[in-house]
Length: 70
Image (cartoon, helix red, strand yellow):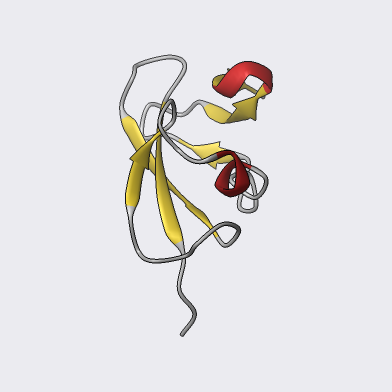
């Protein structure tokens, strides 16, 4: 099993947190908010996108570190 870091991305519709995994950056099993995640980690944050919230919205991280409906 490989290591990764987690970026908490809020759903653009209801604001519920989604825990997105990134395998770029340090990969030391840290958890970051969307705003505080290192730039290197953000390069891979959408690797499992689109994300699906329990409210039914599908989304990804877009420009400006904003969660965006797809």
